[in-house]
Picture 1 (spheres, rainbow, N blue to C red):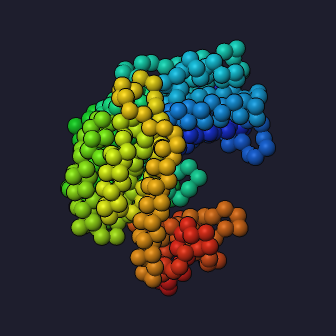
Picture 2 (picture 1 turned 30 degrees about the horizontal axis):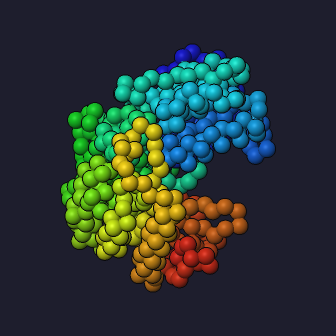
Picture 3 (picture 1 turned 120 degrees about the vertical axis):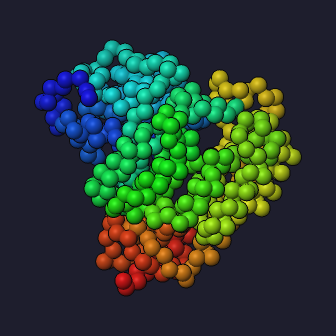
Length: 443
């Protein structure tokens, strides 16, 4: 798979990884780490000087770009002799800018993210950053990834890229066109994860409902196949576009063996006028119908919704319309993002701009609405029984985990064990109001 490597070259060399952005990035970083481990690297312990630093970047907002630069500078200061590799969306979109950062040795484009070893001939520092990229339009490779990271759940990458080109978004320019692995290969990765002790898998991707573009398969066929993998007790579907969340998928999840009643659906704007400016592929009526369909099949499902505030063209009247629409939806929580202008996007041609102060005000209103909806959802489940997948806590903290419908639970029980499914009775909120306390019931 890789170029010939001297097996002694990287033995006991120390690596540091830094990831920004989405779950997909975290999954891919974990896969990079596993690849390096196979040739001798180990993760650097606290206080140790690393021999290599790998930074997997994000570029979804201007703030994300800034955080990437700050992270690179910080790692260079902390590990001045380390070989520094930068990959990810920011590296693909701005390779020259990244390569010019002092201390950066190698910039890998999106299609090369899984081929680091082919370009890692030594760990000698370079006079200037080497760039290994191709134009995004030419990216056709699907780089597989199934990884655990530091938590109980595994992340299985099923799809990459996007063909939608929404007016505000740079992701298609960073990750390329929609592409995916085969159902056969993804099922095999899930089986391998089960053999490694996985109980829960999150399906990740850029536009996972678009699965099948490169293989002629469908998303519903994928989840049907994954549902049969022995040993995997839980699957969660990460963000899926409302126009691709078919009734067939919803109905399957409601009766499946292992797919959880948990949905994450991007709305982005609750005004049809703004959705049109964004070049989204649905309207509020379609979105509302999807929420109603989920509730009819799974009354207790967790439904998280993404919203962008302050996008170009979002006049005050449009925001008020959006607020009322979102308020009317029977959803669980909101993920609120402030619009960030990205170079090269079509949204820059829209004249009306929202001030930073107004973006903040709108965000605060939606976050308060989200808190109220989430509190009501949790409160409704106090006193009920549920099954929780336990996760090992940080030192001094109680065990925690999530119910099938993604209620966070704390368990003060010395008999609790990591990665174990237990039946509990949900009690009142914990001290900081972020989870429900629960007691384990006798089996």
